[in-house]
Amino acid sequence: MNIDYCLEKLKKSTFRARFRLKNKEILYIDEKGMQKIRQHAIDFINTRLAPAQPKNDGSQTPMKGHPVFIAQHATATCCRSCMEKWWKIQKNKPLSEEEKQFVLNLIMTWIERQYEDVKST
Image (cartoon, rainbow, N blue to C red; front, side):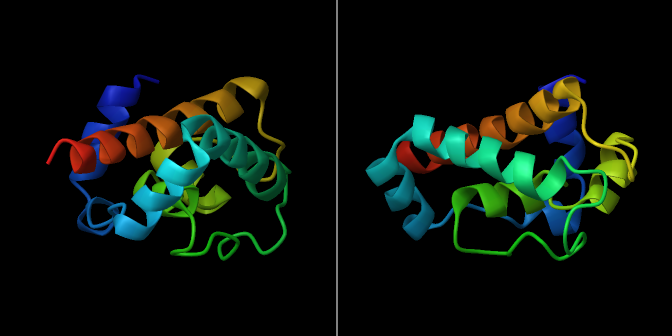
């Protein structure tokens, strides 16, 4: 799927569009670096989303506390139900490498754009 198309689609959702990185998350990215944030995203995807039946699916992603968590809600990659609804990624089966890469690219593109928007103002 085209990431730009997906991000435009998400902007039409009142719920998804309300998520923004705040100063706390921007400072965290400044401190850790974008590569470390990317590694965190990979870890979260592998442990919280990739299994066929993730533990606490539907409530495994906090609404705050880490840039990736916020991005997951903004990009409808917070749980398998949202991923199925928005991106047609079937529940109850492990994520394929291609699906994991899509989720990672969507999350990281959202974070990078949010970060750039804040830094350019």
